Length: 168
Image 1 (cartoon, rainbow, N blue to C red):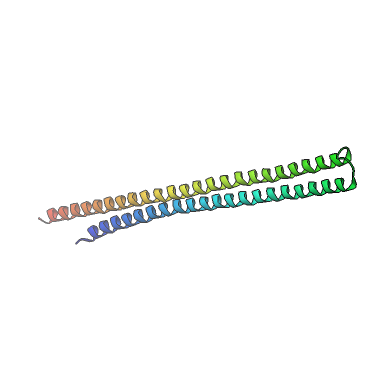
Image 2 (image 1 turned 120 degrees about the vertical axis):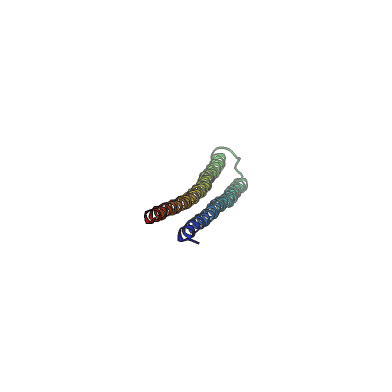
């Protein structure tokens, strides 16, 4: 086997191996991006659960406060009107305000987590696209190396035939 044929074969083998390696890298990049997105989505679910629990806790605390207010008012013998009624209304509206703050914080965190999950997917797809491009470049490099080796062989063959003609 001539060195040119060996060089051409090595170039093709290198290109094919590079192609396969970069294709595997692309698949892995996509999978990593998807995994990271799923982690973000799982964090979103956990955050939503925590916020729901926090809202329930705020409402339970407010309900206890209203119960204490009712009990104190009833114990004093005063009718539920005027200042005691205003205190109950303030407690109720305070509870709603606190619950809405918890809900707002939950929606902000949900939007952040959804955006982060989408970003992780895009990053994975971007890395995968880069690896696919590298795979194609590897094949093109192999084809170029093969063509160069073939051209070198043809040039060598022409030189040999010209030399042999000159000798005759």
